[in-house]
Length: 159
Image (cartoon, rainbow, N blue to C red):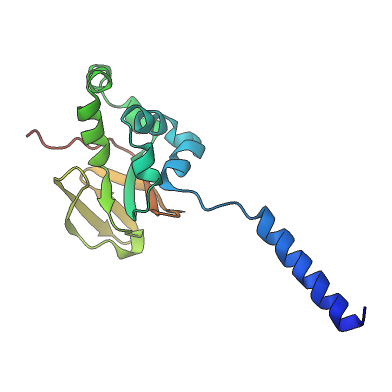
């Protein structure tokens, strides 16, 4: 084997080895499942039957309440949602916006959620808010959109 053939063979093997060790991109559902601060949300996504949706093609922007955000919700409210899968699904979908919106691209105003109601988003400098929630960690990329961790659980308007 001459030197150039050997170099090409080595480069090909290294490239293939690199490809094999590269993890598959995470979906939004995978991000929730593997992020410790989102373990409560992950459990509720599964309970509401939204895992397949959030593993789907999207794209989606999810304003994901942290575990601390769920702890601030009255226990009675969480218990009620736990007994009503459709209501739980509605609350969770109120945190999902069709399309991918990175923090830098937020334009103040209302955006329609996957639940059907509007939420108000705003930006001051680099701080992004959605309704009365503050984005604590922005732009967690997923293969089917983006996740922004928020400090509050958003409740959709009563129908």
